[in-house]
Image 1 (cartoon, one colour):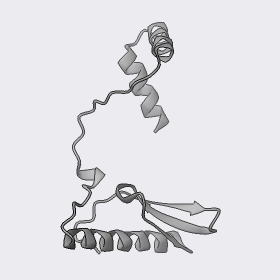
Image 2 (cartoon, one colour):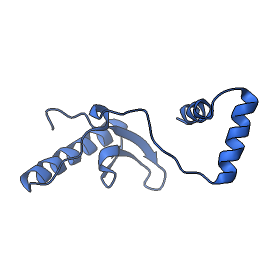
Image 3 (cartoon, one colour):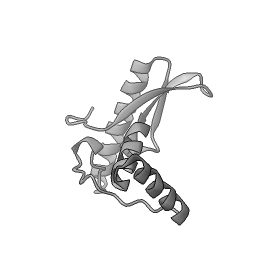
Image 4 (cartoon, helix red, strand yellow):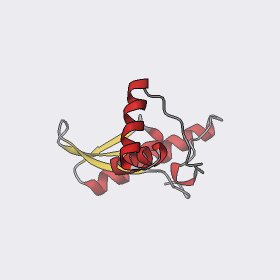
Length: 110
């Protein structure tokens, strides 16, 4: 296993495979199927550790864990002019800024 494993893992049920699947956000092409959630997590962590070892030994870059990245809190989203207008109207009706309306909507979706 990695000594400093700060990657983002998730275990979910795969109805198609009838098993739990371990996933890693930073390595979206990797997965591990197993009968228990604990085994699926252990499996995906080992696959990631092996992949990182291979990347390092081949002189390739290793993804930075999402947990250790610094985020500014700003990003730009392009929408249609009709969507922009509809959001601006909704923000005005709620007496909040467009930024606040969209920020709260995004937070609610998480």
